[in-house]
Image (cartoon, rainbow, N blue to C red; front, side, top):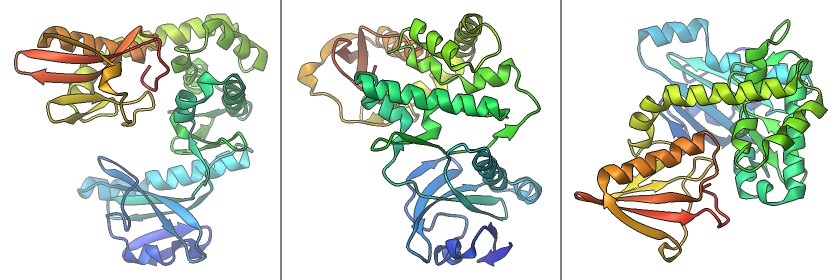
Length: 338
């Protein structure tokens, strides 16, 4: 079904999902974005029946992007991937419509109430409570098994792309872009589907992860060999990307890792969001020259990317001319930062 609203060409399952908000939308959100990252934003709205929806909008300017969007829309691809997941019995967000206008495209999904990011839930709760830890691990191994059973590959499968409903333990895939079916999965596909295991090594022994991997029967090869290769290749990737990541992300002050407040860089949580810091009286303060402080600051993020447990982690990087102060939290405290 094709519906036109304010220059937008929409393809909804049911046109009522577009009312009344779609008629007001240009190439900017019609409500305050919940997330905004470069050319992408996500906002929440309601349809004519008062049901909440999320709209993910991507807007790129220029003739080439307008032409590309006409023949290949990311929104259309994500909408199709969401319906593929549903057809395979894999719980996911309910994709309702997609649309395009010039170089902009948008995909609409039903809001999932009572849910939190599975990544955040792991670091806030599940890793500290055995029952929740087991439930969380069961959920993710089940997702991986279902993907393998249906020969589905995912270009970016991580815990941040799953919403979890703590009250029931249900999980739902979101951000389905790029998911597709293949005749069979190769080792690269399997590494993509099991990449979510790697950050857990900070809290779960390799032996336990390997035992679960063997018991779930996801692989058709030796699980130990596969897991060691997964770990090795991740280290290679982190090392390869490090020079660019340290300069453009960690030291920029504008990234998922930290943000700037005056002369301070403030560390984000392990789920890459700002969070209130502990009282400074609970932190150890060290003053050192700026180069030495920068080395400690960067090394902590490098080791975080490798899922290494730190004895202490710097939460604040404070510049004071030629001298710098680091505010560090001891690793024996329960924390969202390591």
